[in-house]
Length: 169
Image 1: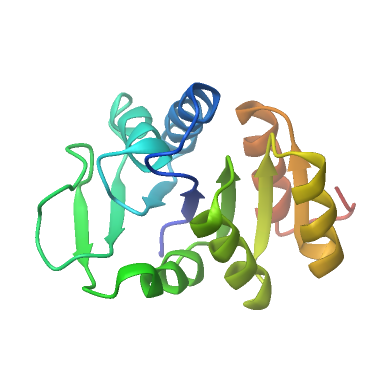
Image 2: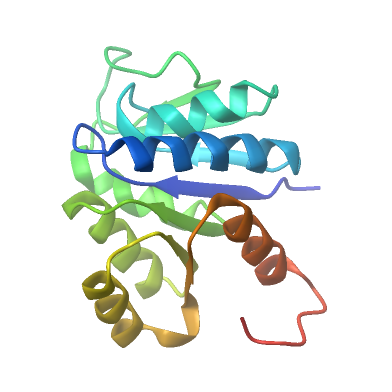
């Protein structure tokens, strides 16, 4: 049976302390659920924090990397996939994820959210500003969800993944 893959996307070098804390907690909770964590795989920002969180509870982590070698890979990545595609790897990140959770915002994260929505994926935005909420809500209101903390992101993910989904979040 195929494992559930949850993608956590967010800023690298420009991640805030709050983004990093949320990402660490997300990684931990995703792994606790028995899901696989997928990130951009680098050793900075949200990618690294989420991966470290998942590894703290022995979770499985996948990193889809923009480069062709192991320089800059997070030590918390179990499976490193080297694409040599730069930012084009963002499409692989989101299409390989069953649900995408965005933690923080930057240009790369916005591109991943947009690609996910274009691919008809469900996207959860964790603690984003009102401008971002309004923008992504206009793009795909039925596939975008807003939460304020990691616990609610996981609860929303469970609702999205539920085969008996009867209500709209």
